[in-house]
Length: 180
Length: 298
Image (cartoon, rainbow over all chains, first blue to last red; front, top):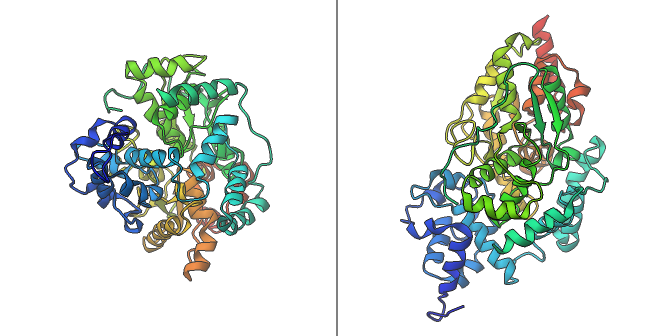
């Protein structure tokens, strides 16, 4: 990717535009996204600031921010943005670029585990996902066990192995649409 | 993706009694959302709606697939499996199917996605169970055998039920759930955080942040005087019901508010039994509200 300054990366903006749509270039920095976000108060950089970093090609700063991992994908910002931007998709794009570059702040990202299970089986088993995530992130074990204690006595944990009948079609979706 | 195009309405089906729908239960219906699946099937059966489960449904990707085109592909594979309108009880699946149907209106997206699919997508009509139930009850209000008179219900939409825009109701101030609650003769409370996200999608990875959000919602429901919260999404349900006890311990506050899936609440009003509705699977016991409802009848 082309370096256009010591900390600027023009390819970064292009990649975000490819993943999240060209509307992001029209941002007027009004801050409606930040004001609408249910987790903004817990973010180090607010959604508006992440978009500014993207527009200014400040890749390193954007990828170092913790906020994209606090996005719940609730789309409050999407339905309110006066410029028709999809800030949720900008957050996803930054996370995806982090994953590609091995800059995920957790030992192993939840999204990665989730997607691998969908890709392999076509469906997900919550038990398998929590188990795999807990192995990679031992700190999450307490919470997983706490939830298990709620679910097991109510027979809400399934040990059944889930898989679609035509997994090869799922593989094609990931393979072909992932690079399109 | 642009926002052009309207919801697919090419396969408008007979809305009258005895209707048939394709059923997309979603992954959690096999585990943490079992009571959602059970009560959906029971309520539809009581309302003369025949459900045909999609033959080989796959996960919609929930909120965890960052690549939008892959998300569209996963949803389109489900929608291509039927010519009937597709109904799901999960707001996340519903939002993903709706978003995908809208994206598939664009010929370039449709061509790309269809190239990866065995059975090609040619349009779909997507419904949430709320849609279907409210429609059935508006035509046949006498089905409410056990009016929930005086029960104070917090209508909790969560985030994705009304998002993206253009679905069942306004993403800013929806009122359709209040309408349903009134059909059941219960009283919807004024619930300010009704479209606020529950924090669920990040509860595994950012526990503290997710719990902060869920705590705000429970506090607001308590302030509003709710005796029960009604949800449309299994993740909202998990955050508010399964985690309620642990939130009470951590924050030193008592809530004790039962959280019911909309189909469980409707099922009670239709006179269905606790086992049919999976009421023993809820973490916060709904017994007090059932007692109240039946007491008010006598």
